[in-house]
Image 1 (tube, one colour):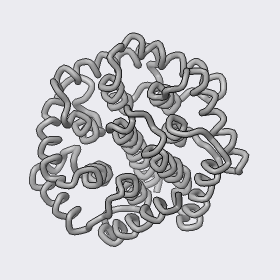
Image 2 (tube, rainbow, N blue to C red):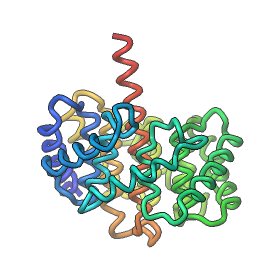
Image 3 (spheres, rainbow, N blue to C red):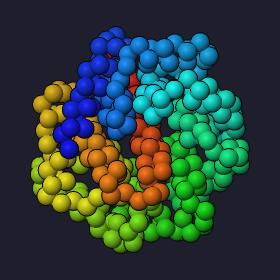
Image 4 (cartoon, helix red, strand yellow):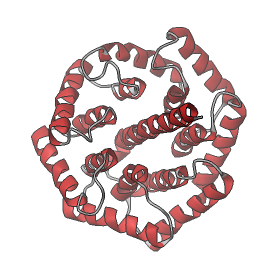
Length: 315
């Protein structure tokens, strides 16, 4: 398990050297996770070439600029051997997002990437808008732009959208008794829809994971709930898997003085990735895991931007 963490550390250090003045460690950690999960080494020359090409093809105020977009670019760079065509296609698909709900989303790069290799992308966007509206009807105060990406991921995986909504609500109603209501909890209910377990069993496993981590004196905050749900999908909380998470949390906490809440995010996603190759369903093995990860990366990156902006304005 720690082999993948070592891969993560190698990527983190390489990213740190390549982004000395343009990024902080919280964003570098998000980027390094992508390379560790895809078993891809970070190549600074390759990444700089991709970044330069992206700048040449986008305007100064494009959603594809800025620190948030570097997390997105690392996701593509880690996933595709030749990243240039993927960037071009994502930029082309982004033009379809000038429509209601998607137009002003800061997550447009992630949403555009979700449309890569999708048949009839315009129809999919219309369906995602309808699903997003359903989310807002059920939970108007909890639904945010992260749910746009969530809707797109969900509708590509499931055909019965009415049944899907009922299933999501089943998870949410069962979970809100034990966990405070939040957008993160709503994302958890979306993610658990991918579990092959019966709803009651999936919720039980999720809560068992949280309890086992808390017994290890690991604080599980709202922001950790979506990656915890991802881990719940692929493996149960055994002594071995819980210890693997705890080991990475400890190692990350010792290395990082700032944004230590990200330590658990790193641990949960790396341990999930370790099990995805061996125990996950065919659905997840054929790319859904990567999209679920992107969904979480987008949400975490957006939250990190908000925290940094708030801190800067207060200072």
